[in-house]
Length: 295
Length: 274
Image (cartoon, rainbow over all chains, first blue to last red; front, side, top):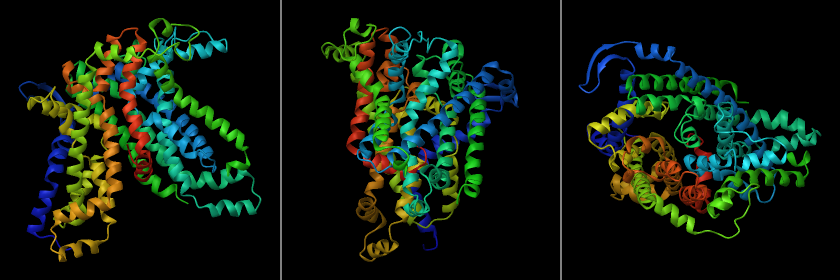
């Protein structure tokens, strides 16, 4: 490309202006502003005056039992959803990859939940989880299991949320795994077959290692996504964080502080804690991912 | 590979059972939406309604302003998609074809913002929009979503793969940058553009947290926000609730079934967040 000049720079700015206007106002500025806001210790919000900056909001989070609960629930949610979703989607991707007919049909079927509104399907699941007339308890009753109060028993709130989220997340992961499987050259398998390696050992010694960059990528993306769970909780528990806050997640906590309690400074601090957590996983992806997982 | 370990029948069996479980909630939604109130509460449940109560859809539509929600959702989806398309085309062109000072720094900076979760932006954006007096208006629902770093990044990759010689040839023929963008780049990268538009349309239609926060009045709600409000309004009328959920869900399923190739291929190529 040619060397930039004043004229070419001005011209480029003209092309960039619409995108930059939006991104600076609604992405770059808020990132900085909410960092600042998280350090507001003593302030008059309506007159826009800050008397003192400090770590008070973060200190508050450290002591707030609700915040601890939110962190704990979110961690349980991530651990409940991500491994199960990856194992299941990997299994389905393998089955789909076996050169069967109807492959495209099945891929479509499994992907459908991914394109639908989380809120809308959560409301459908709310009906499925209904303790008296729900499909779930009916099916369980066929096996002699007595009705479970899925959404109203604090013990079962998180498991319900996890079950629903696994169902919702499968399609996207399957598509990524299929793309990963398609990129493994067929020659490896042919060579192994000539050496009479069993199907099982071909899976463990060829497919699984060669698929590891995809698995790693899917894991990180799923973990980061799961840490941000909100819509699912809101819709499944009818605009509440579950019975006795049993499904209070990190983003739900941010939402409550910001929107219900108008405590903008604490909400910003909590949002930055979320950022910190997801940032750690982004770094893992950027550094370890590049070094370790390639063969 | 797996064909040697499992018989063909087993593979089909597993896929059918799994697929059935994936679709069961949708079937149950449609089936419930066509039942009478008494049928809904039957135990053991009836898989199909004795006869289809299409009236439920009309009733749900009358009980809450779903017509208005639908109009809002369409307006917000169309305008934010259009806006993103325009800003993305121009910015991706600048980043891939124009020489300017600070280009690489600016690009890295924008890429860096992709690491920040959207939840961090909520409070300041709400404050900005309140100051502008735009809360509970289309501006608040649309404007913040009319540019996306991810889309710019994706399209820039595609623009870079278009041979440079085409730009030179166009310049020799006297075509300016804008004309070149419109008449050469856009047609060549059409599949990528279709993917960007589709992903945005799905994302915008399904968006929930932001519309929930910036709308106060009933008249400004989008479909997902209106639907969650309807869960309290409908009470135990699950047949109406399921009919309403179907309004929100079916348009995206239909869109997906018609254009799935672009969506699935785009996602597997881009890989990164949806």
